[in-house]
Image 1: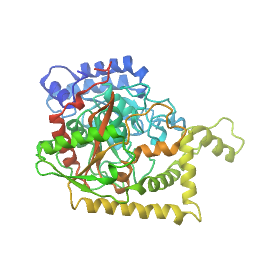
Image 2: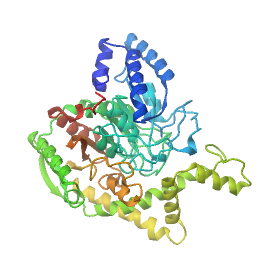
Image 3: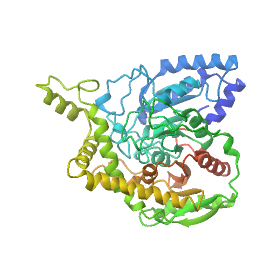
Image 4: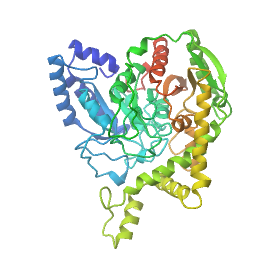
Length: 484
């Protein structure tokens, strides 16, 4: 069962070939056996999962089940879950048990999905390798000496290792797409505002967006159908009808105009990855797509702009963690100042502290105009580049990451090198566009992802292109050794 996609499992449940309880037990047994070597899960909610599976079986028997009823999924530990620890990968929230469900969690519950547990992540979603988690790094199932990507590394590794059929992730600068690429799975970051952020612990509020991670585009479509939609509790949620994503998968890509930004295929991209991508683009050509060279002239400014905007917003969002109201509190503080200083100093890790300091500096008197305001102006230029590009093409295609998964410790001493691992994904967040990563091959034994970028609210087209590609290739079926 663990090698089946979500779509196949849903069909098997409806046909009565197995029950949700049997399916859930099978995944819980795999987690118990394999996760100690991978560290994907922070919390496994076995008792809750079995209860939800029994309830799902009752719904299936009554004939009022939806497409995801009885399907096990796992939540990134950034989404609040009522009665279950929500740590955000940090010591600061190690003891925090959320009193409510995030909208995304709530919608999966309403759909009858079964939650297996909460997945490991970079602390407060700040990282590109899953090495900043308070609970230790997640290991890439394709090579346990390599990182799985971040910050949604636990989600990507768990899907790749068949420890869950699907998982939620969040993407602030590439944190769904880059780990999806490193772990050989499919992941989509929707348009900003398409998925509610209510109950999703904030890193950078104007950039964060939740999305699904699974083995196939079809599975992502099924999950996004549940996740997407207006939420009046989220002031950034967009009140716009949600299309039938699964129905859109069957469309043809004949005549699709694919844009290849020259900035994506120059210096910095590994040559083997460029070759793998060219082969994938050739497959899209065979399906009837046409390819056009385009330019995104301000792409080179996306990383410096992002690393002003995101830390500035993180500095503001993380000010609430002061040791007074909730979260980590230092032992025996001498006074209020000592309480604040030691609680934050002991509760946050090095990368989080680094970004808070950068953000506070960028927002401080005398530097706001020089840094933050200028970064926002560059953000506007990047959005304008994409607007002009989508007047010429339907979808933009390029690499998800400049390299395959790197070794643990390879970039931890050089934050700039680590930040550059998101060089192809960050601009999508700055512009608020949808983007996804699709597995398209290997360099050695490590997976390579191809990034698809769409116009605003064009997730259906991205899923369609990815699905059509996956119908003529089999990269999404490959499993790491020992996980099949």
